[in-house]
Image 1 (spheres, helix red, strand yellow):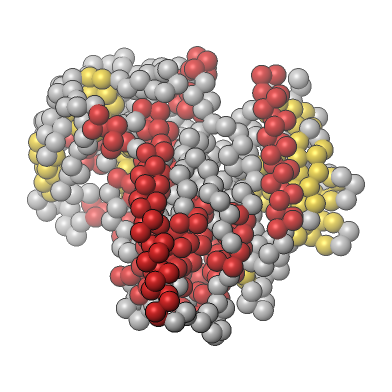
Image 2: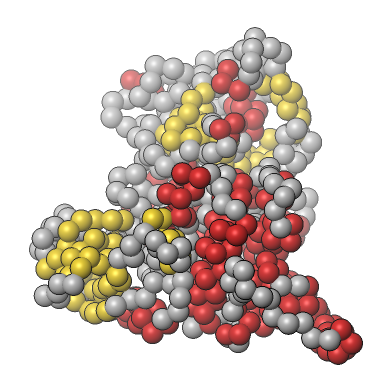
Length: 605
């Protein structure tokens, strides 16, 4: 198979003899969106193009690898079925597909261009929305999403930029992620080399979307739409889900404005729960929390709740019709009859809700770590090494258990009024584990292939570099699913605690003194001497992403902290600290992981 080396269709190409490709809008893991021109005006063309499993030939045709042909055909069929479903939906608040077709060895969906400004532009101008404006924007979108869920269609990419507000004030939700889960493997959520990536928007994507094995369902869109509402009332985007899963310091929506509807703010916070089972499980259940009462919430919750294996039974459309701003609410039933009816079904509804919530929690691979950890017993002792077995039969990175203790950590200059002030003390009350080496190319290649063990041979024993912070977080989430242990990036304090091995800051020579002399790439892991606790390459070779925000004070998390020197710099030593944009990938930045050694470490305080 001869490939053209070009990922996108060329500008000027005429698709289906009806649409002239003008520009590339977004390049995702599974699909590409183009701005195109039809005879009657501009349109958006979405092409199914799974870049990891297919290539473009002759600049146009999409051809899968020989081993992927059957799966590609099935994925194209699913993509077209989703587009056809959206075309038939035809509900206010959701953009409808105009056409779907198979061509060039793949599938295409065409949607109209909606005139107006994005909600993101509105928020950039005004900061926040009033309660009245918020309801006018969210209610039609919520209703339309509920109808889409009824027919098995998820959005998966909700953010303020996906909502267009027309000149008359009516909102429309666009950019459904048709192919987002059809490639059947864990995803890189960002690829700085791949262009404008649209699959996951930081702050608006729940934790299950950071792993290909994460269980997606109506609760996924509930989280994302709640994140949009949070941005509308708080004036800032929610914190990234992987960061919240480790230490959730995000202020609740209820803390920002005492003059807003308290029930609505509480419903936003409930829908932003990190564990799937703690969220409303359907749009109907969440609509009842936002705009209804407790009784209606139980009805909707029972109708829409499901385990994470798939959707539940459809909710009646009437349960999703919300009152428009200024309209009268539905009349309430007389109190006597209402109370008896509530009693008749409330007890079994509550019981069913509890049982299914437990099923959902057990079902959800990304968040099942605590139960698995408890089954492990006491776990290894400080100083011991272990490697977890993965569900696909592979073995995870080598981990070393560090002891409980204290760390006198100098305060970073950027975070301190006086850089000379006394060190901050961090207390680690329990042992925890840190990876002995940086995550290697072989480890990361297995993740990118979705667990296919043959892919490990494509990688090597050098650190995995050219990986953004979000990619590293996605790898940790995937490994958590594979092993049942809660893997994540090490925090700044954990990294330094392991790097110092109980010593003072900056003591001891770099464990890879010749790393800077290697031209063009990092050295294989483990080639230099380990520190006193058994960790390699923490002073040189590659810098490493850690969990911490570099710009948290600004109410954002656009940049993350990196630790240690690298082969591209002359700086070496365990005290080296820098910052990089979280979406960027660099040839001299890798990462290592942290994890509980048994039931989980207490975060440093």
